[in-house]
Length: 140
Length: 377
Image (cartoon, rainbow over all chains, first blue to last red; front, top):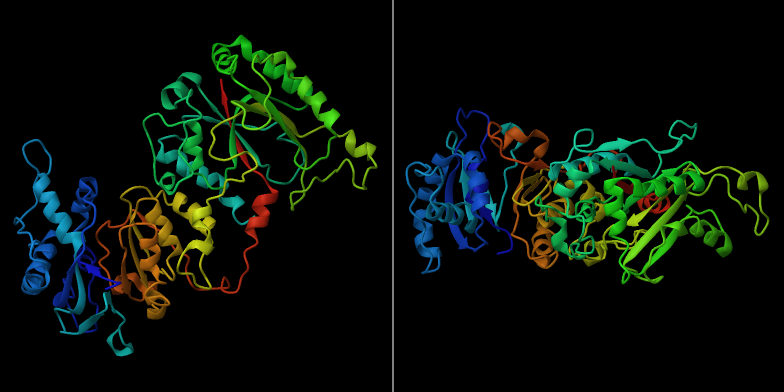
């Protein structure tokens, strides 16, 4: 697939469909998942940590877990992540944790499926890796 | 002209990426005759650094060891003792940099100023670096379009013969290339306002007797670009990207914008009106992580599987950007707004008269040279 959507992108997307009180986080119906490795840069992952909603990452991982078990290549496993991200005694992040975050945020992609508004159930289609978030006139 | 307005901000942005602030870490020295009535923006800037600071900050000796003309130099910022040239190489609107030996309102006063160099500690060190017997040298003369005969040019050179460089003269690619600039008034198109030969071969005495705006003498720093600015970033030439659209922003403008946005390695970059992704690509080339969004799905998809934003990124071996179809004139409709997500948001908004505009900027830049001088105190 040419285009793909990362969980990092999902992390800050929301639905503001009329009638929804809470449009975040979007649920993920993953019909097709792909893994694409990218170079691991610990500094970048560390910079991302304050920017992301970690709970949403955990949620997103849960959402795609089943599809990952069928779609990911056998040598790649969806990493299991801790409940919270914390620094160790040296005030640093564990490198293995950073690697796991890297995989989850940047290397696992949703290619086909839907993002679903938790409030209204409105489904936003992900076609060939690009999510379509455009609202209709009556939804605004 | 559109771009010249960005010259100073772009320079300041790139300097700040190296923790250098004009006014604090260096001074902006007024040009000769800065109080004259000449109305146009002058193409030169003199920055003065305290010599000890400069020695600490920059690698003064290895001016030849500059970053190669390579894509990598778009993103590298070496805070640990870069060369002056490597810092400035990132600035799009700066043609070249001189290590300024002297400046004046005439050739005489400039030569006198250069002669004072020996008297200071900094000056002695600077000149000593040029005094290797094995170092070849030459003096180029830049008269901003005013015509001078060869004998006249040699006369100008002779005024600086007192420097007595021991090495051999070598015109092409010498070890040390010195530049003598005789600045005159230019019109908006960048041609001399008072040409010596307005009619071919007939000297206009009145114009000829006008004093210059300023005269500068110094040593060209770095090998990244020759001072005529011929070393363009060929690889970013529009022709070479696989996907172009009718509104693809010229590569040079996106270089300037990404400098203004201080895009560097790991900057989280967002383009809310990504279009064909020219600006986004430059963010990627500077080491940024890229996301783009657009209303128009056809533009996001590109022309075909080999001509789209993703293929442009792949062409340069960059990590793929994420793309979303959304209406970004109202960002909060689709995205959370309470987290400081982005380091840079750089875009060309698609509303207004720009569609159909023909950019003639390249002519403007070509005719108005800009250089930065670094003068050591």
